[in-house]
Length: 389
Image (cartoon, rainbow, N blue to C red; front, side):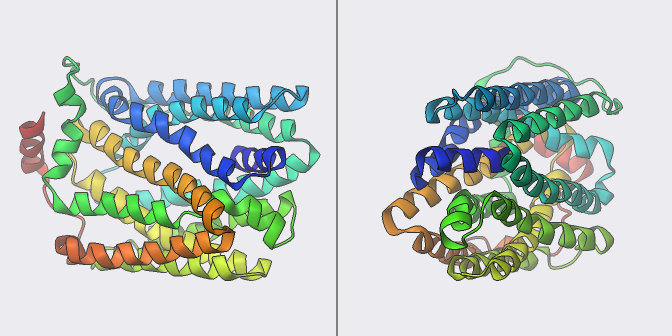
């Protein structure tokens, strides 16, 4: 809801595609600076409390947006400042959120649990944008106030998660320990290939920052249409995640990952060239379905191949790659749209995504040939972790 409200309000305020892209930049900076230290927090403190505190900060950001909209004092600069604060909270939150699952679920069930978690998230992303568009039509402060109440509910829910992990030792925080997650990942070409594929594919293929322009200027709809467009990928993702929860991927994991990324790029091309709302929604649904396949594979690989003592730091690196690709992808879309036009920018992104997938097949043959999630487990995983801590 908040993303829809921010995108529409900022575009109404400035009419600039570049400003929509800058929303990604102001979120990228705190993500880049804070994510690796946040991995230390996840491995040394109660992850539930870290998540809860961050969600309270996000609540404050939504409240500020609501008050600013109601009072009429929001400017482009103040919106960017609030987005930066919320982005900082999310950067600190994500490693702890991602590491929580492996504390609650046995390793053998992580792929299925990842699909179920994705279905819950996608359900929210279906309802949220559509509801955000409708509430924005009533008043932007209504959309923001509703988002604030839900952020607060999330903070309470985080506090109610039962304690399952044993207390972790709190060694001195050093540069070596901060970067130990990177060192662990560097030992596995599969993990390096997986994370870098996500970084570059999403960096080039993300067109969500331009949805307000597509909704108003190309498809001729209002905030309700923007809500539908933002919900469409989640509809496809939810459908696919439910299938994956029932029939988890267990064979030819690597080839499935690359095929999903190529499908993502093709769906982006169809959306770029569409002039009909129904076709655009269908393309975005396929985009979301293919994306959730790669998300489940990537998340499961990281969780299964990482020992408990390292999960916070390794998930911090994963969050850094994911956050970087999402936020810089928005900036890339805004810049290319300003230089070449809206439709060419999205076409370039779709073609770039496909090109990256083909190139990565050659650069990371181990990932292409990967059959199952399992690799280093048990005592071997612990030994691998000790070598980099």
